[in-house]
Image 1 (cartoon, rainbow, N blue to C red):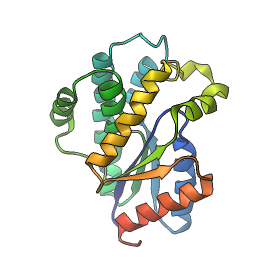
Image 2: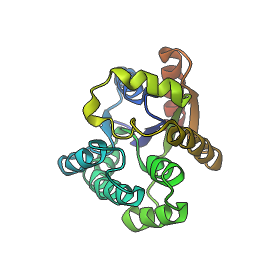
Image 3: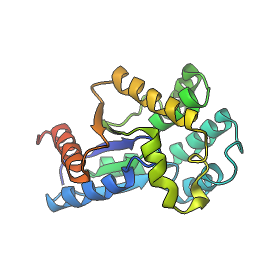
Length: 210
């Protein structure tokens, strides 16, 4: 089966992460790879219940710190029950969002000090991180326009002000610059097939096939 790999997809609202995840799964499976798609918040029955608390309701339902604590409660369950076991079994785990989302959304955009979130991560997961993070970069106006046709039940973060989403994009840029060995930034304005091929090449390189 080969060795496992933990890959995360990051970006603002409407970046196209879910579409890219499905495309990558098909491409990798066509090459004989075993792939698991998952998401945050979510990925396990318990974490999916926490997801409902986070993505539904008014934009100001929770403080950013409360959100971070809820995210990590879901994340620990996700890592323990899905991510670690599947990677250990030799599968490629592709997660739509992970800890970088917390640093961007609740940290830089939400106002929780970065050192507090780093400490929370260390308490919850130690030094556990993805092997590769693919950041789809698009202007927030473009992403939010793509989300307008979605089911509004899970639109809590999308409903936040444009200034929040602008801070979010800047935060992701800063994260990518701080860890160039882990991040690969993809221009979300390119055709989907071009983005998918660049993402696939990055994954294969991490697997030693690039």
